[in-house]
Image 1 (cartoon, rainbow over the protein chains, first blue to last red):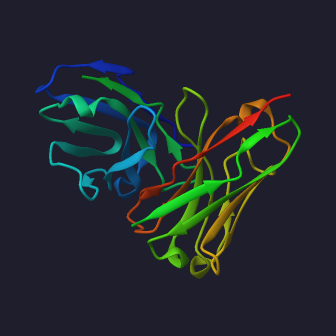
Image 2 (cartoon, each protein chain N blue to C red):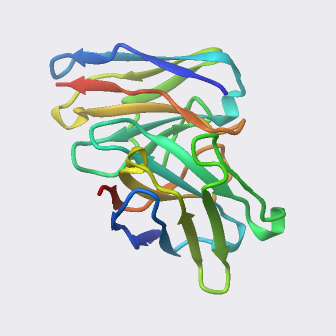
Length: 107
Length: 121
């Protein structure tokens, strides 16, 4: 099983700042199958980034993904209050599909 | 508009069974790989099973914690996917999401609103 470890657990930043969220895999992940999801309080998770770096439909270009192998990053530039949420990385290339434990972003 | 609507959640006693349903619309269901993901109260996301499209052989796969107890099935004539859950324990208490991979871009494209399953005596 591929274990995904996200850091930090919680990130507190101010509007306009830049957030950098990390996702580290216990073994190499095909970038094609590395995704990021956003879950706002009381809401369903929604797809942000797929293929490690491609933005899902309707996602603003403030959100960007990068990385390969075992190290992946979600960067959110010019933070806005509505970016407050939990962010999860996921690999869905090798069953069992796994999620990171999440990073809570507080703005 | 893509819609995934789960139903069938509720309160069940330990050792009991429950069957969840998910009605899909707004995307080509027959080529979608369908998943179930759960989230225990205040916790993270856990994938609990996937069924491929019939054109991709229709097989299902499960993680260890639910293998042998949960079964994912689909009915393409009705655009429905199901999750049969047996031998439930309190550890299975969670919101269960029906999730579609229909763009086959290596991610879970669309999520339902979820249905709550509570296992308690």
